Amino acid sequence: MANYDVIIIGSGPGGYVSAIRCAQLGLKTACVEGRDTLGGTCLNVGCIPSKALLHASHMLHEAEHNFAAMGLKGKSPSVDWKQMLTYKADTIGQNTKGIEFLFKKNKVDWLKGWASIPEAGKVKVGDEVHEAKNIIIASGSEPASLPGVEVDEKTVVTSTGALELNKIPKKLVVIGAGVIGLELGSVYSRLGSDVTVVEFMDAVTPGMDAEVQRTFQKLLTKQGLTFVMGAAVQKTETAKGKAKVHYKLRKDDSEHVLEADAVLVATGRKPFTDGLGLDALGLEISKRGQIKVGADWQTNIKGIYAIGDVIDGPMLAHKAEDEGMAAAEQIAGKHGHVNYSVIPGVIYTHPEVANVGETEETLKEAGRAYKVGKFSFMGNGRAKANFAGDGFVKILADKDSDRILGAHIVGPAAGDLIHEICVAMEFGASAEDLAMTCHAHPTYSEAVREAALACGSGAIHA
Image 1 (cartoon, rainbow, N blue to C red):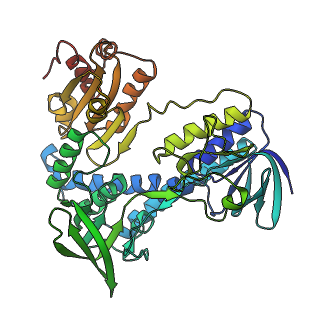
Image 2 (image 1 turned 90 degrees about the vertical axis):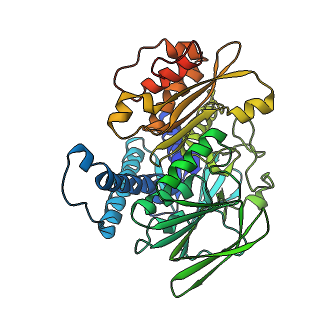
Image 3 (image 1 turned 120 degrees about the vertical axis):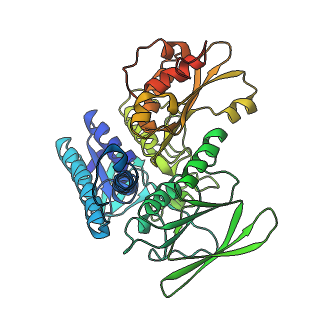
């Protein structure tokens, strides 16, 4: 048994970042992880491996569709799926080993095994009970399914199984048009699968700006994905390595069946707290299974904190990281802070989609007067040269003060471009501040400046 200032349960982006920050602040720290590798869902079966496959499949798309136009002639590459999975595994390995190195560098102990909390101030790992003045629950989330949909991770898979299918399916049905479904659906579409996305709502990526939703769906349809919207999945059936997806259209209750070689269930995620013993502890849990916390990320039990996917808010790795650092600061007697109004979201398809802050819909609902500055990437020289002219930048600013309230980007490098606007919002900048900042030419970022100019007297290249 060992005594610690802080024990963090879970080594995902929230947990490992929190552990390192705690150690940097002079706290004796340990992190519990039951997997053989650190990094949680994100590094092992989520963000990182999916980006590896997105990158590889995008390179294939470029070779098949754009190389010849650039004067790069030759036979199109063939897909070696086994080698692509090896590349993905190598990418995972480099990242997880990197966290091991950081733990050693910062003197964070890795307690290997699955944790439970028998009482406040104690964490049990295997047969050993460790004492901790503070405990941070950062155990993450797991895929959520639907009634009648049985996941076997072979034919009917979650994102975990979709990252290691034994072969590229001829027909893939994706249940759910959220971030995970569209990213992985995009991967397999590029690799040659016939992809059909079945979504309960009438728009993709629920909660995003409506104009972005419409544009994004059109672009993905143009790339070969098929969408069945307003459809409620009833059940799945599997036999001899094949699957059937039964659904009803909400508009008329008509019943339909889709046949597939694989089905990806991408209907969201739920907090993963199994085995922690939270009920016996008396920890307050919401109806949605989320741990309730205060402004300092402390639960109703003194000395027990929670961050990331197990608490309310978007299930994003960077949101968990921010909370992990803030909770560490709180425990160390400092003032941790997370600005929840400036947390960007990114979809890593091609083109990428990124957003931060308010949408037109939320501003209208709040009755707030706003103005829109919009610029198409077709007016951006760099984008046109790189066959990346699809999409736009849209900035929303307060009508009177010109303060930036939100931004939405569909286009090349959207996931990187959005951060210029995040920094501006963090400093309470106006659209004019952004418009008056010199941007290098030719860059994609000029489209952001043009959108800011469009909030005022007008864009130059529109």
